[in-house]
Structures are given as C-alpha cells and as structure tokens.
Image 1 (cartoon, rainbow, N blue to C red):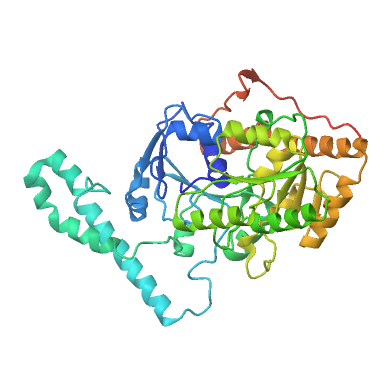
Image 2 (image 1 turned 180 degrees about the vertical axis):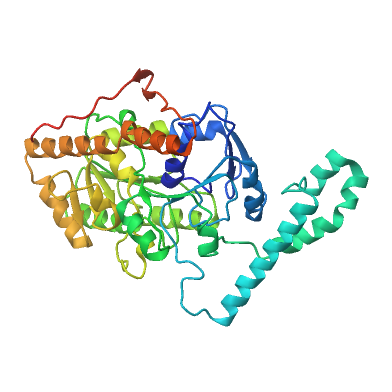
Length: 439
C-alpha cells in the first residue's frame, strides 16, 4: 500500500476477513510511521495480528512476494511483478501501460530495456544470496558478522546499481499477467481497465461502514471531504470554496458555513495547497481541517445538511479519465449520515447518486449554484425525503454485502476467510437487508 486515503481503506477492508486467521504483513512504500494506532485513528477499525513494515525500495516487491501464498497489491498505479501463489490487483484507476502504444519512441524503449536489465541483476543477487532480499548492510552485518557482510559487499554494490532510477511499475502486459484476479472499485474503473489493460475485472465496490455514520441534528453546514491533492488528482476544493463565496456574498448562504477537511502527507505540495485554500477562505465562515480524527469526521457528517464533491470539474473525460472520482466513498459516508450529496456528474459518482431522487449531479459551477438554490427553496418535508432516500441508498454499499462477495472470492481461491463482526460505536450489531419504503 502507499499513502492514506479512501482507496487504501478499501484495500485494508479486503484484509479484514483474513486478519486473525493468517500470518499477514502489510508493506507500505511511501508513508513512514503507519501503525495500528494510526489505522484506528484514521479509519476507525483494527487489523488484529497484522504486522506493518516499511518497504525500503519498491524494487524488492517481486522477491518479497515469493514468500507469500497471497499478494494483494493496493498501491495506486503500481503494476509490480507479483510472484506469490495467488496475486490480486485492486485497481482504483488504471494508468496507460508503457507498452500500450503501437510504436514507442527510442528513449522509451531504451528506458524499458534498462529497467529489464536492472530487474535481471536483482534476480541474480537474489539467487546468489536469498537472505540479502531488501535488508540493509547493517542488518546483514548484525546477522552474519563482518566477514559474512563483507563477502556480500559486491552483491550490495550490484543491488545499489540496479535500484538506481527506481521503478514506477508500469511495465506493461508481462507484469499484468502475473495477477490471478483484477478487482475494480467501480463500473467506471472497470470500463477503463478494459480499455487500457485489455483485461476483464470484477467490480468490488468499497465497503462503507454504514453503522458508523448516523444522522444528527442538521445544521446549516456544508461539508467537503477529500485529500488536499495538489496534482491532476485534485478534489477541487478550490472550486467549491469559490461557489460558497459567491453564494454567501449574494445572501443565499447567509448563516451557513463550509468545512473542508481531508488528508495531507505533509509534503510541500500538499502544504502549499492547504495554505492557498486558507488564504482564499479568509473572512468567510469556512474552516480547513487537515488529517482530522475519525470521531471528528463522523460528527461533521452527522451535522452536515449538504455534502459537496467536485473532482472532475474542468477535466476532459477522454484525455484525463483518472482525474474524475473513481467511486466516491466519502459521498456514501455522507449519505449514510443523512447529508444530501451535490456531486460532480462524472466518474463513479453517477453510480451512487441519482439526480433529484437521492441527491444532485452537476457539471458546472453555475449548475451547482442553481441546484443549491433549488434545494434551499424546498419545503422541510421534501428535504427530509431527500435525506432519507440518500441514507437508504447508502445501504447498498454497506459492509455485509461486501464481505459476502469478498469471502466468496477467497473461498474460490482456497483461502480461509470470515466476515468480521460489524460494530456501531460500542455495540456489536448485525445489519439486516435494507427494505426501502416507497418514498
């Protein structure tokens, strides 16, 4: 896994039916200090008995996976060669493969050949000294002593050379063919897997712990949740802030406030994005909250009347399909808490929200403003109906259905799995099948 976010949460949910039944290690490549305590704080659940290890270098993955019966790859955009007995790739969204073009420029072909040469060198190191793996010189010295470590010094030098330049793991079809099964987080993602990878996939909608999110006393509060991503994967908090500012200045949202909260990895790019949002929010009833605890997020959902999401705005769906929301976990969480969603009409969001029935879809800032005005002019009964329909729709993406599908998948693979108990706050509960009243 890499980083934090909704996609990683989806991947960790795939681990939950296995936790406590198997020997499990989670390798994380970009986020140091990932611990069970942090997992509990950010995501609200535990993975008992699971070990967490920082991966020194992603080039080590092909060799590490040989030691496992099951390898689950939940790194975004990673097509690491996988050598376990069973290999599963969870795709949040596919990226074009390096060998997808009919004719590659010479520089690209040379880069591919250099990458294959480095991989061959690492295979050689692994064959000559399997114990080396990804361990540091100091660790080998502590295990084998100075003489043993010095004898392996040439292998360390070869490994160092092979690691140079890194590996983005977009190697094309040879790496992709290592995987026993490909999972897509939505029909939208599955469509692009078929186009980019020329492979079929199974849809595994992210499970939402519906019981964690319950409606509270609704306030004149708008909420947006998503990483403070500075790149082409931006959640477009800036556009939502612009819309709020205009409506507030025009008197439409007098008495309302906006909360924008999400994750940051602490990098300069993320920090710059957050600072820019805070400057734009000066003088407005707007707060920007970073890496909020799960308990705080749950309270915000409960109090919010409107949920906003703008990923995909101003993007081209053909040239930049990855810049749209691939599913929309936070949208479902907000709906479970009775917040009415106003989400950009693109990507996986259209698989969740039906316009006018359980929320609103929009494609421009003006359309968003028009929909907000229309909602505010509704009577209390009509608003209550929308909230209830949103809540009921969220049940379709709950944990029980997810665990039934996931445990069935593991059973087909010959892997023992069991759905974990579902908790709501401090009480263990079982959710029955949702019966939707005719609203």
